[in-house]
Length: 335
Ligand code: AHM
Ligand code: MG
Image (cartoon, rainbow, N blue to C red):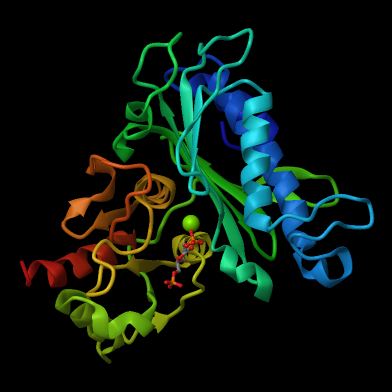
């Protein structure tokens, strides 16, 4: 049941039974992410006070060490998930390798692994532009009772059981899916409570926004260049509008609400693009498909790619269905 103004806590409880593997474990996990998101949100909002509170590496007046925000976010999410003993492993964009969680009483009994990009777009923090957290949840493949292995993390995106993001923007929102549509919750900072503000989010079938770092234009492959020119042509509902924040979560969020396409192609200088399959592309692809959009990595569906390494990068095209299909036509011309 979806009801506007429900709190995220109420929503999680109400919808727990509709989840096919429901045992309460996934609900606890999403609750833990909600909690960590609130703590990170508080810190992100203080980022502009760095001259007053001290820069990264300093010790503040309370004697606390100031951390870089991406390090803080990474520590906070890992600490919260570890303390609540609800996952068997975590992989983070900020860590070289995955972390095995072996709680004393549970001895590798938990079923889920979490993959997380704790603070995506963090280069935007210094200039007061929105950043985000992206998370992705899978059931482990290896048997419970044994330590997790790399295999548990290298699963294709189509095996995700939940994924979502937090956007620390003019409002802070948590948007997630458990495979039954996408719902968005807005934080009321006065109460510290997330409320259901955007039930059943859907990409419009098509849109008028294209988001790409056009500074890299000369390095793009011909199909992408041609599509960008198509977006700029004066014909029918075109030219489209170019909007690029450089913060994937924010660009995606806007495009999902207004209709648009996000592109991070490979180029002659970055053969695999920039974005990480496991921490960025798969969770966004799951959300996109659940919201009636598409996500592709060149010719293939993002969520069908079999990952080969934790920090693998892939080209990424994602957004309104008809726009991604149109782009695909241009890419196909050069194959
Ligand atoms: P990050 O994980 O180092 O923050 O990089 C990911 C970010 C995305 O949020 C954003 O869409 C992209 O990098 C922007 O890259 P560029 O500056 O090359 O356009
Ligand atoms: Mg990132």
